[in-house]
Length: 168
Image (cartoon, rainbow, N blue to C red):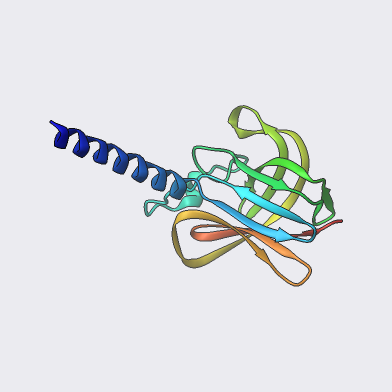
């Protein structure tokens, strides 16, 4: 009887540990340090399943840039995306597919039905690139460079990118 209890407890602990690992893999966080503060992006990471990921999004649509959870931007320093200054704080990020190869990064305080932005703080152009080696699980990287950093979303054979810098 005692052996069965130990085996059952061991199996439960293994399942809980496995679930935690899969949860982290599905909802990764990526962090970059910029200037005087920390910039963090959190997102859910869907699989492409071999699909053409851009064919899943209709022109005019807003996309929360991930799955299961809204994509968030938390910054301890003011940021500059193009001509737009984003005050330190917490925001949601959306991708807005205009048409053809035209995309925008929408930085807002919240979302409403259809993932439409609520309380938009800034809208900046996204640059679309095609032909990359396939990325099965969507990922968002914050890449630091000389004076400028880049937010890069990669999924399938595509990437969307927007440059930003410390505005303080």
